[in-house]
Image (cartoon, rainbow, N blue to C red; front, side):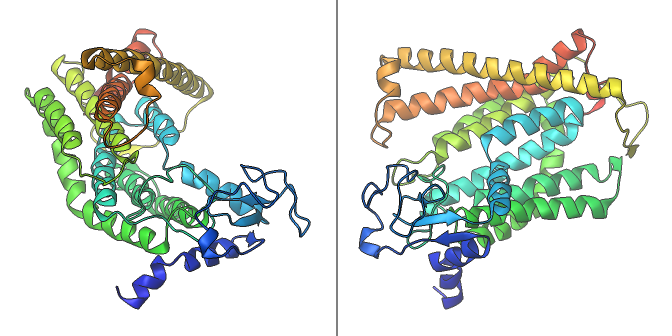
Length: 401
């Protein structure tokens, strides 16, 4: 590999970024001890509360590589913890429904389809390339996603895909300041990308590769997704096409060489997109969509107090229904697939996550495809129909083809 690429990949560069933003290393451990769990040397299993020889106690933390460190700047720490959550399931589960119910479902469908496609490519490449995440001497401030491979960074890819696709798909629909939108998108992207290096989850090369890849993907995908969404919504054969493609994408997902949660996370994104598209298809073929009273671009209407009240009511009621439907769909689908396979669901749930545990893989992927497909369908079709019935729906929702 070229020396410059080796430099970008090195964990030492990650350490420099961490130290720049206020992570202070308290001790250095020989590489031979880097892989050992941090249960010795007077520390607790989670690295909290045990004194060090140099006098640090409450602020001292220990990561999986036995690196003792402390946070000296909590502004950056909180900012990057929040920033990295912008690429997590919790953010998707709140942002996507909020956008559909309160802003623009036509733009939302296109953004979700683009997000799903880019996540699939990025996650697949992780399991094909199989580069590990940064190791010693870099401290890992976050354990979540630790089992996944690192190259490319899908957080970096999503940090570009979501805000910039929102800008592109809203540019011809709404009248607003593009420079302000670009500034917000750039800050959004920068916070997420730096957070991944700061937390020790990615090398700088992982981030750069993710950014380059997402730009290359978005150039053809932006117009393709715009056209494909309309075709799916209006075609009579869309349900068969959408369901078949979704299942095939997960069945023929690349072999990672070891068990990682990447395939399950990819099933989540694919099924959400499928559920949303099927919901829009049903709206169209039931004759519920209608042409808008006037063509775009539209002025952005700032909400009144009554509009804010309805927005809050839709969001709270809708998210409660999403949580309930997720729990219900997961429970019945998990139990059903276990019944089909002749396995006890509790025993299977507690079994080890390995590539050899085929039954658990089948059950996990099946319940995620079904559960998150239901969530996507409810977000686009069922809950807006409930809002309309309760007379709290957004008036323009059914004009957003």
